[in-house]
Length: 160
Image (cartoon, rainbow, N blue to C red):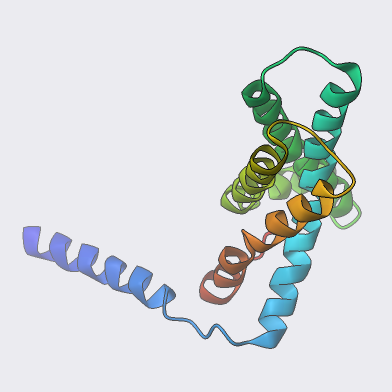
């Protein structure tokens, strides 16, 4: 019994290792992963940048960490809401919400954190300027893209 359990675990581990051995040069898959990542970026940016802009305009005295934490949460929520709205034209609202909640949180969280780290490191705080936004969005797009490609090729799953 113990040997069978060990063999089963070894088999599962082999499958995981094989999933990392993918062809990283499939242009059609990169295009699809890029498209999916762009949708995610749009959804996340709405909540994230909107939150930072709110605090910048109102001058509400919160710490940079508090503002960025809230911006990440709002970015995740706005991405889920946007995806639910888009999917609701193809399925019931309940199923659309379930699908949106099942999106890759790894992709969205890495996108959010990278965007906010760029803002803090370059501007020194939670501050939006005309020149920082394209940098934040570019880093937010590039950060999860390899993961989204891997997820698409190795697991056959897309984020959107």
